[in-house]
Length: 257
Image (tube, rainbow, N blue to C red; front, side):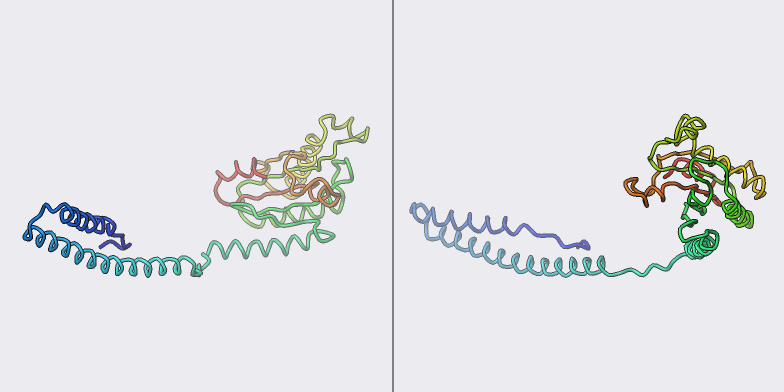
């Protein structure tokens, strides 16, 4: 018997019994059988009936077994499974807590710098207002201080690749002087800011230029809706991603959201 019970063809046995009884009745009505033949047909009908009763009892037993098996499977599937976190999971959680503490100390106000979970590494998202004035690519003194502290944290551990990505909200560049400097709009502005941040990390933060990549994504990777002032504020940011593990993850960091 297999691990999961199956139904036996009870209906077929019943059809056989009904056929035998039906033939017996038809022959009797037609008066075409002898007493001996009648006895033989009656005995056959009795055997079919006994067999059917036996099958019914057996099927009922199998069905009860099947119901118990299904109930046990449902109970096992719904039971909570305690999964012990792996050593790598615990290390990642500890690292993210550490980064959250660093981020909280880096910014001048809550939300200025946020830690970001990245596959194969970690990252920071810096609000644009602590780095630049509106429409500018000149890093402010307080922004420089924050970036140097970020650089010191990155340099304290081995790393393979650093991505600096500039982001803007969806509002088009409108100031005449800004339009003149960045005729290609937000995409060009975000790229110029990413270049400035990357240059500072290398020149003053002593990070390796051969491991640095920069990208300007403009409004194309929002983290919030651009329908409110708060959403736009969140979208105006510079992200610094540090990849520590698999070099193949570099492609994901360069094209991901």
